[in-house]
Length: 212
Image (cartoon, rainbow, N blue to C red; front, side, top):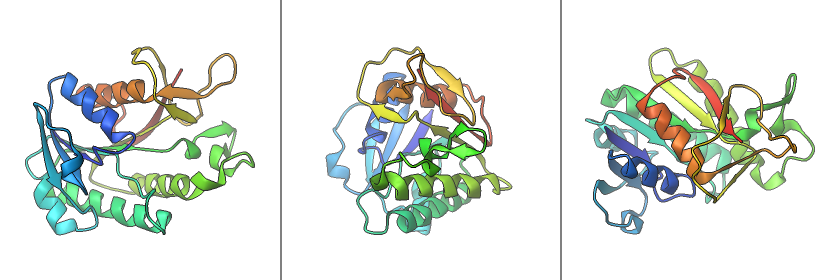
């Protein structure tokens, strides 16, 4: 497939890029600093500003799918910037006529008890609240989207560098944890789950999650 990957040099985006290339997909890496994309077969680096909807729509045109690993971590107004960027990405994907949008979501919106989301628990780290709230609000907006075929993949609570095992569980609304109560997934296995969904869609217009 021909994939447009937004945020391909980021923490999560870089793992998704490598998994997509390993499976033989052609990737357009849409990033703020294209010089940071390592030159390799199958990838084309393009400078992009996700808040410029007109330019982004032109850049997305002709792709089979868009994967968004966009984040606002480096911005002063993390929440505002993320929501603005996601609104632009959704609109540009539709204008470009790309049939699918896959989005890197957040664990904060997953339930840890009936009606209680991880983000709303006292233990949730303060430094990640704006990012998590952005992901939660973006998901709510996607659920109101009447046309686009979207999918959000939320990680486990801990998304860390680690082995690519290809062995994990999928869930829907609840945070996944192992027998010891640890909620985690490696970056490599998160990327596997994302590209699995790209190749064999099973979660159209919904959010799902992955964990050990």
